[in-house]
Length: 338
Image (cartoon, rainbow, N blue to C red; front, side, top):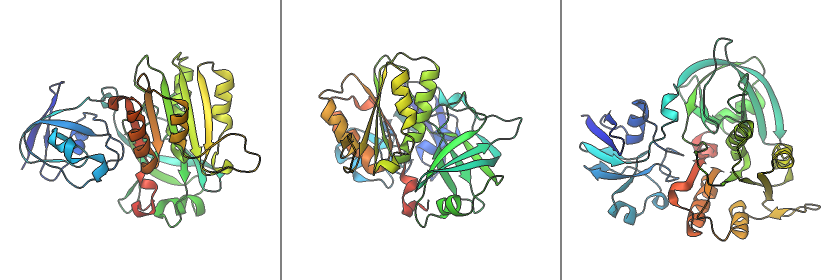
């Protein structure tokens, strides 16, 4: 049985089928709702149910509390309609106009950036280009029907090759292939672009928080912003396990020298001999530097535990909930079959 869903305040309508989540149905209808993990972990897809009934689905309790439910909130990546609905959510207007394509591609080259990070560059057919917003991701379509998602690290204007940063997950189905058997000229199939993690237009300064290969989409966002000669104040905190895991420090380092409106703060999990910089958890480095985040936008990308901790801590420092944008790399866990 299908139900009609009306999005407020836009008035857009779409149909959701039995067993289909509200997020999936909206995306299939061409309406880009905000989301991050798509599995009830990050809370980025939270919206209000104004009228009607939903099955809340399976989610992590920290992403949707009982108080949230009493206020009419639901996670649209998990919720399923039990009647016609009216929902309130801020649509991602820019992304809905970009067509999602399924394309063949060729592995152009591979380069190990760190012991557990591989850069992969993909070449599309000569008559194809992938239009995307910096910060979005693509899916590899595997022969067994599974998908693997990775953020694009190149800016849209530098699209002759698509650049990905892939972290090795021991025992992971796809990443084992990338690190051990993938080679140049291999043919793959991809789908994209996907995701609502991109820079919003605003006069507010932007704070970027990256954990590990969470740097990839932020690299795309910042490279594009500097290409457009933005004058917004921007700061990047990039957390890594050790110095080797901070695999492209020269990129933000060069930006800091060249861009008067940009600062780069690398943060290592633990101190190392000769390391003069910051140590500890990356979001705590932000808290040490900012007593009040009420005037900022935050863009966080990395492991779910980092994103969740940052969201809670930063909103406690005054950051409006609607100004926290995230992309949780849930697929990087062994349980996700990476």
